[in-house]
Length: 327
View (cartoon, one colour):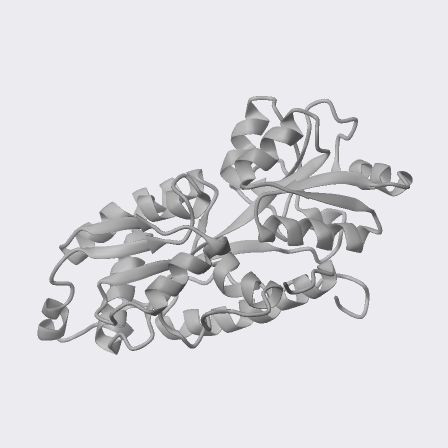
């Protein structure tokens, strides 16, 4: 929170695609890896936002690398189980992980004991995308915009309810409520789909949900979208205003990247980064990611490592504002 009461953004990114010239390798080094299928671990269940992202990337990455990229779901512990498994894997480049906000930015601040260091226990390949969340209410709610919803919440001594299927959604809502001076009572769910269903049914007042799922439900008339969590208007959700139009400075999005075990040789990391950025430059890939609610952006391994450090600091501030105590 800044001195004038607005929320520090800490994002300031949307980096341009990294120049591949820095990543060119000798022909011999390129030929050494991969020499067999590459396992891309997803630390969340099949059908999750992270899983959908991985499956969009798997085929074009296979084409770039000349070997199959196989998605391997290792769910558990809000991303801990699968991410830890990769931290302990052989550092030969054949086991990678989709690292994300939950495992690398949120968990270090809400868990008293982390089994790995999300920055220093990995060799970081590169960023993939960011994604805003959609703030929605039920179809029969009296609110037509976010300001009206927050006014109604402030007028209720017992507040309104919100559902959340992951820590990112919980933190976004808590930060919003505190910044707006409103009271919202959280109700945890096993996943974002279940959290969204109960908003649609009118059992819960609101939720922050992933953009793709939220837009589908909005277009079907099952929920009403009042705002999106990114600071700026997004082409992914035309007509849905940023939360920042009502709560100045609000800018919270989730991010995704690819990492490898810490001791993975630098030439392999560079080759993997080269392949990832080539995939992100493909118009078909970019279009598909945007359809699913992702804003693709690429970085060098060095840029991505620094981005991770920055995001850990930023989310630590969000957790502090939200008042969530480590467990």
